[in-house]
Length: 499
Image 1 (tube, rainbow, N blue to C red):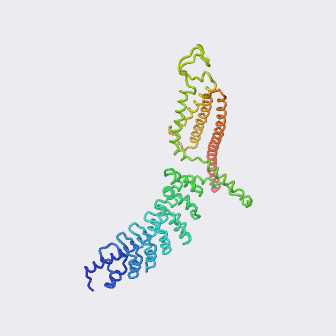
Image 2 (cartoon, helix red, strand yellow):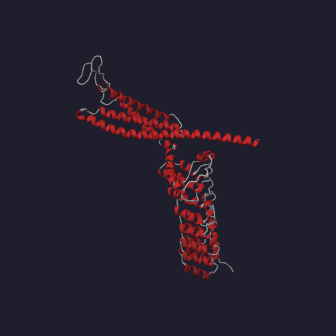
Image 3 (cartoon, rainbow, N blue to C red):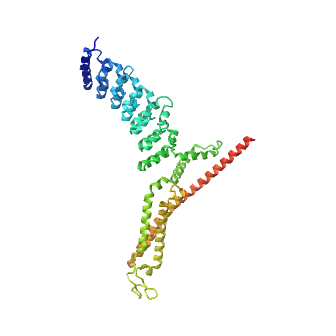
């Protein structure tokens, strides 16, 4: 049979136009004129098949008609090697996806890769097509295990494109599949070894992190290391800090997440003897101990030094310390009550000025009238100035702010500066208050209340900081002792083996 190229070109154009419109009547007419028209589309200049056009336009009936007359069209690829199933999955045409999968050999397209190495499930996950995901996994569950060329799994794509519901469907359906499939998918890393928990932490997805840490199958993956030797908590701390970072950090820590350096140091705790099984704990005692243990864990977490906080607050601390130093300097040069404007060598009303003890211009007035209060004020003001300068020196002097002892010194210097400023303010408020009508007495009572509240708060903070540094020093000493004990045990074992 001779093929007329001109007629073939005209019929092909009509076929593609019908596919664009979804005109099944035109398709039937073309088939009546030429029963092989669906076999001749490779002869046309189009890079897509009529099924690609029909699927992309969302024409279900037309797509079914094409599959009925030519089921092999479902496996044809376009210029990007995308099958019609790729296009239907990305577009979210669930019914068309079902029709393609139910066609003869149509489910094989679930494992066909396009030029970027993506299968239809990858495209559905990237676009969040939840119903399509169910259809694809139901047809070929093994497509869950297919990775991209860079090592990304379908769950990595859900994290990168922020489709939490799609991830939940994938996790749910993989849980009902082969035994161990869910663990292998969740714990799988990409080309750099990053699991989906690493990715969720880096992209700061709070809801995704909360969901992943709640999965029983996550298990040890919370502390899995990527190719750079970092856990998810390490990856989070490398990103800029905001409120999402704090929330994600709490979720990871509550799930047992640790930094990589904490995982290496935890090996020193394994030398502790196991609990004696001959001393059973009653259920009632265990139930009573749970709240106490939980409270102790929270208190221990609260006492831990957060060196990253100090780094983030470095600029703020420098500004506050500079402001306190400036206020103290101004108060020393312009004390409460002002200064004498001229010299007085003779007694002045209300003041003891004479030739022996003249009132010199530029000196404080209250230094002559309220000598004791003035001494206290200047002493406290000088202490605040010195403490603030110490804070500035610790910050700009290049001291390692990650060092726990330096953090403790910084906190104590800042507390000292604030305490001295508070006392100096109270004394200044009393000094400038008139004695008439007991105004000074009333102001003094208010100052006493403020002083009591401030002293209580300052005492609590100082005690907590001191407790932190004591616990840190004790832990360091304990680790040194544990290492020494481990070395001694190792030497004794070697000697015993030698004997």
